[in-house]
Image (cartoon, rainbow, N blue to C red; front, side, top):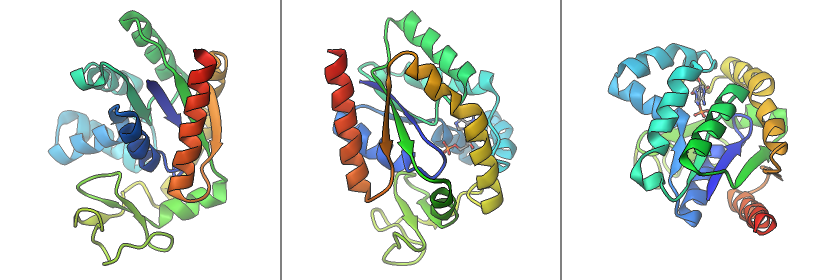
Length: 221
Ligand code: AMP
């Protein structure tokens, strides 16, 4: 399957993407993670992305689209992939359509995770992420690790993302509303969108997501 995951920052895209990718046996491709890896490695791309990411703004399309296409062209993505954080505006969505067309592929579904705005700010401001694996996510109130600052899953160090501060979250939400939300209409035009609530336990949301994806598949068959 080829799936796009959409939703505001804090909707739990990364967490859900990790579970869904495992269930569906497809790679989880997160442009945010790819940028963060470039920043850790100190590449030119990482240097270009860092200031924009810290400010909650989008990295320019040319750079992002090229990086996403490179990743989608890797052998492990031949049978499908789950995109998390890409596309993030209509230009990127159109570029993805064109790329898929040229490859003789198509998207199967766009999963839209819905969550109220006040919940987003609470979730993000308390979020702590494992340095080893960004899908190991904790929260200082809602999902505390057994030992402060240490990942329960792998023992990695937990940290707060530089763009997870309340001010930056507000900018990221504005960017989401103005630039990313329009891609939902773009994909509604292609009959691909399944909207689900991202509230509740992680397992409940995964269950909802799997059901929505199965319905999409059945409708298209
Ligand atoms: P994420 O991990 O998806 O929340 O992304 C973190 C940050 O990386 C975003 O706020 C942007 O600065 C940058 N970023 C990730 N994906 C994209 C994209 N598709 N287009 C532009 N910037 C992106």
